[in-house]
Image 1 (cartoon, helix red, strand yellow):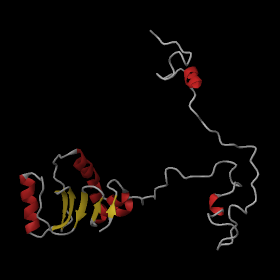
Image 2 (tube, helix red, strand yellow):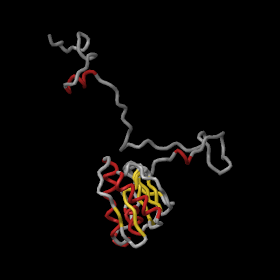
Image 3 (cartoon, one colour):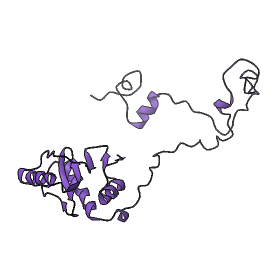
Amino acid sequence: MPKFATQSWSVRRALAAREPFTTYGAFRATNERSYRVGRLPEPWADRYRSDADAGRIVYQVYSYSTPIAWALDDGTVVMPPVRYSPTTSRHQGLLYALEKAPSSFPQDTPREPAFAPTQAPGSWDWPRADDYPVGEEGRNARGWVSRLDRPKQPVRVDFAPVRMEYSESYSVRQGWATSYDVGPASGVEQAA
């Protein structure tokens, strides 16, 4: 049984095509026979049981363990107008797809990573760590020269890493002095 994200287009297409599925949450659909009524109110539970006893139910949609919609063999879709939790209400909001054609919904697009790591500007010609494997002196099994034998790399003049350290005077100048910055040693007067 395919597993989809609850609010995906795939769920809507599966509902429209009356295909069984499950989600990563509490929303699922099946075409297997079941008599579970969950929290369905009694008049609707009786109707569901009578339709199930007659063998007329061909497709059921569940939120948690409650059938929130079912399709009959003549094509009729039964959606009880019952209010449940906010989550089940969101699931009920997807039931409009039962009355649509599967082709009316677009395909899901694959997610792009939120951040694609790239190299720092100007760093393309820097030596890479994986070009110099750890080992003894001389060439290793792959023919790489060890660290002791490699030629010295020139120091780049246009870029140098900066080491940031805590500075009391900087924090005081910025106006966010901490309790460590206030006192006779820092030269900052303590407010009375």
